[in-house]
Image 1 (cartoon, rainbow, N blue to C red):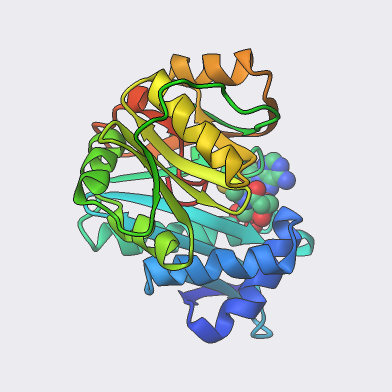
Image 2: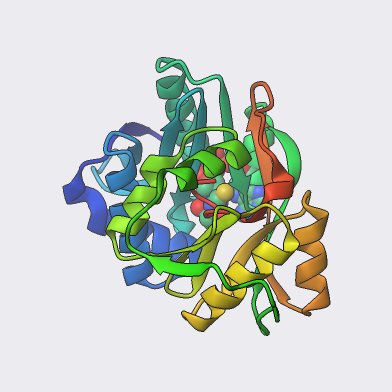
Length: 272
Ligand SMILES: CC(C)(COP(=O)(O)OP(=O)(O)OC[C@H]1O[C@@H](n2cnc3c(N)ncnc32)[C@H](O)[C@@H]1OP(=O)(O)O)[C@@H](O)C(=O)NCCC(=O)NCCS
């Protein structure tokens, strides 16, 4: 099918949200928020696939964190899938990132996207599983917990150490939009936005449990566990949290120096 891929502009957000909502079967307000945050984090990072009749059929965004970039929000209208639109979008995203010195591209593949990314050369790293937090951890080490609007610099430092790149621009965008930051001394931090908590970066399981217990108090009910962190998986299993969604984290390019043992919840499927 003849499509061209172009940069998205803010005026496209409503139609992009419609495409995303239909592809992922989510509500329009959630979908709109996805692109508002995405364009806030990386204003030139969203793309649309446009058909011959000038309508938007697909979306995709990248977030450049230095030499590492993340791809997210890849969606094609259900009635136009399997005609090469997803492939055209991905090729354009990869071409653009190649021009900007990105060495490694990562993403969380749904079961629909997995085959597409394999064909483009991505390899599997590990599974990332969304759990519903049905019961909070009971933790005794929460004395130093704080919910704060001020972001101490060490938060970005430990995040970069765990994640393997500086993604402070994405964290700041969430905090600007009213997400809550929970800190535990300098032992870890968590960000809560609505029902979601993530990232949770902590020096050990005790600290992670204290942060997640506080997040639960603030309304968090979902988090994405990186299956390569056995402590995080152990916590989810022992507390009998319910798995709701599974993706495969994939990579194109050399591996990054992330420390998965510090990551108790990912930021999001779209942003790492
Ligand atoms: C994933 C998605 C963007 C692919 O878009 P698309 O335009 O259909 O992709 P293409 O036509 O270029 O297909 C490329 C390959 O992707 C894979 N693929 C696409 N749709 C698929 C599906 N429904 N089930 C399994 N694999 C699928 C196949 O390997 C396909 O190659 P093939 O048709 O030769 O078998 C689209 O299916 C979609 O929006 N899905 C729902 C949202 C989603 O899961 N997005 C991905 C998030 S990581």
